[in-house]
Length: 255
Ligand code: NAD
Image (cartoon, rainbow, N blue to C red):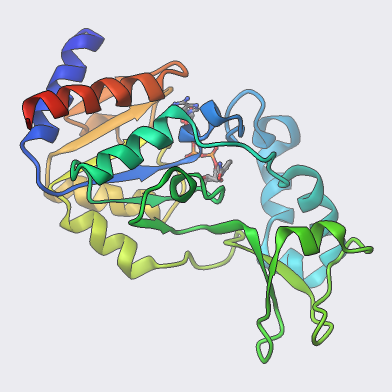
């Protein structure tokens, strides 16, 4: 099937759904200027996946906070970017009732910034930081951490070590039940910009696809569930345009 036919097929599936949920991964933010981990400029390629996993790890954080924070400050300080056309289109689609919500692995906050209201971020938020002292748990903004005079930021109230509010390797995801429920209750699931490698989110999508059929995947390169998708749209930094066209056609059909 050529890409025009695939797009039309996706539109007709979406037009028949009153409960469409979107799952997004790092690939939706590359067009906004944030590299993914697995892509050409990604840190899995440049630094090695093993090294990243060894350091961006909850045990490493507790054992050697200086090593963790040195690495985190160097490689995880996302540039201040604006939502891409893809983010903005998803926000418009939610406001028109074409999608019910988004479950994202991303930590960049760009869906919320674009205007989506029902967003479940399972890996946390990069611009939020929390004191790890359980009796304190004071929350800090990025500015406090950035301007802290030492590598390891400490809580101004209790002196506890501060941690980014993101899910590190070895930690449980956030909002597990809500994310799973939103996905499994969907009539149509659209995965955008994820290789579907990272669990448990990839597991929820797999579970969905084993009960239902209406899985649409929009991604650059292969994913682990391409075989289960009704429609797989291969993109080359054109996700924003593809979503815009889908949104345009849905508006005509649902007028
Ligand atoms: P991943 O496994 O979800 O893979 C990203 C996928 O997106 C790849 O298949 C890639 O080919 C595809 N892609 C790249 N550009 C695209 C585009 N323009 N349109 C559509 N697809 C595109 O993610 P990962 O990079 O392996 O990251 C691992 C984990 O780290 C994930 O949880 C991820 O969400 C997180 N992460 C988050 C951010 C962010 O918040 N922006 C950035 C990097 C990594």
